[in-house]
Length: 213
Image (cartoon, rainbow, N blue to C red; front, side):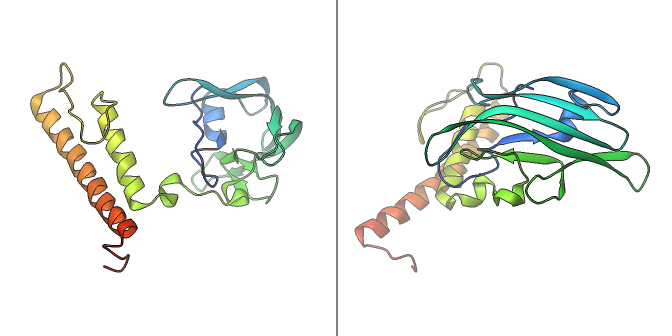
């Protein structure tokens, strides 16, 4: 199940920095199937570098409407660094849909609610729902400057540039000039926002501005 998330980032736990079990994707990929037993390994990779970041062994046993999924892996305690072997089952159940058919859900081990995805933040031991771990999105925990900075670098990477803010970007070979100019306009707009917030930040540090100005 390569590419299931994700690199690791500092700060409070976020969805993007957690391992995710996506039940609809498991079903689409044939790694879980009603009235079948499946087993194997799930692999996570860093979407930026392609480097493997985690793997676990699993078994799925699904019937018509109920089932369970076994997870086996080693977790690391956030505070002590202690390694712990994990081996537990997660309940799975199907609910009828308004227009026919059924939809499968995980039953969160911590809250008991039905969810399509379960998460394992860095330092946690058990996959559970987003609400169980009070996970937010990285963008919700970034400052306006950080969001603009992330957007600027993202736009730069789309044009094949790994250079810093304000550095020259060459037009990628084969890209139409009009397309390149539209992309550059977005880069420049994002970098203008970064610059404006940087000026404000420097002003606060030097005492020339206050947060209320």
